[in-house]
Length: 186
Image (cartoon, rainbow, N blue to C red; front, side, top):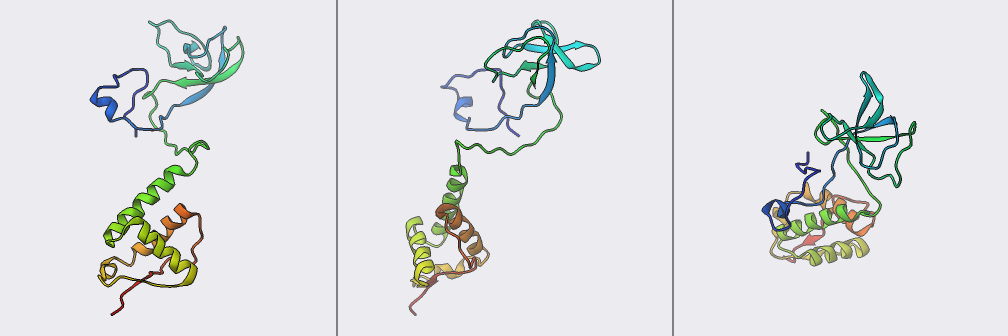
């Protein structure tokens, strides 16, 4: 779970800022009905004891439960239903994985490229040389010669993982995920 905290700032020069990265924040939401007019981002709480559907604006010294949906373009009229965003770290459980079309498959592809780069280093190859050897095998079933025979010391379990990452990076379907394409000329 993320340690990111909303509702506070930090200096771009602090160590805390340097540790930040893109993340997802879990925010619980609940459908509620406005009692009175509300503005986007207003602090809100329950209008009546025991009724968790009707909410009103809260003053700073009152116990608010959340805020009016901050993504609304306009405020909320009396009687309208909307999403209340509960304050961070006030719920007891929640888990989601997210996707977003603006990010596409770039995150997955970057992770696969990194895995292939590490695997290539284990084979004493460069990323490009390993990918070229894979292409040669797929296109012509031709082995790539490697008289160092380092490839023999690599676990056979890694080749199916390589091919899975290869498919992610290239978008090409591979029929045989167990194939290796290195050989020696001895």
